[in-house]
Length: 187
Image (tube, rainbow, N blue to C red; front, side, top):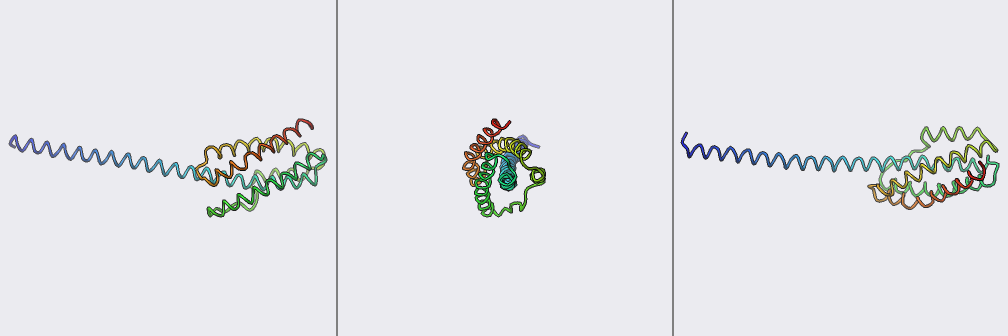
C-alpha cells in the first residue's frame, strides 16, 4: 500500500470512527435524556395519581367518620368538628372528582382497606370511647394529610392536581389546628 493510500485509509478509518462515536454519543445522550424525561414524566404522573387516589380515599373516610362523629360523639366539640369534616371534605371530594373526570381517572368508589378498617373500628364505638378514638385518629390523620398536600403542592407535576392540593391545604391546616385544640382540652 502506498503512503498516499495508507494516509487515505487512515483518514477514512478515523472519519468513520469519529462519525460513529459522535452518532453513538448523540444517541446515548438523547436516548438517556428521553428515557429520563419519560421516566420522570411517568413517575410524576404516578406520584400525582397516587396522591389523587389517596386523597379520594381519605376524603371519603373523613366524611364517613365525620357523620359518625355527629351521631356517636359525646362532646359538642367532637360533633361540631365531625360536621365540619362532612362539609369541607364533601366539598373537596366533589372538586377532586371534577379534576379526575377531566383526566379520565376513575376514583375509588369506597375507601381503601386501611381507611375502611378505621371506619369499621370507629363504628363499634360510641360516647366517650368514640370521642377519644376519633380525636386521636384525626390528629394523626391531619398531620399526614398536611404533609401529603404540602408535598403535592410543592412537587406535583400535574398543574390541576397541584392546584387542588394548594387550594385545600389551608383548610387542612385549619382542621389540624382545630383537632389539636380539641385534643389538648380533652386529653
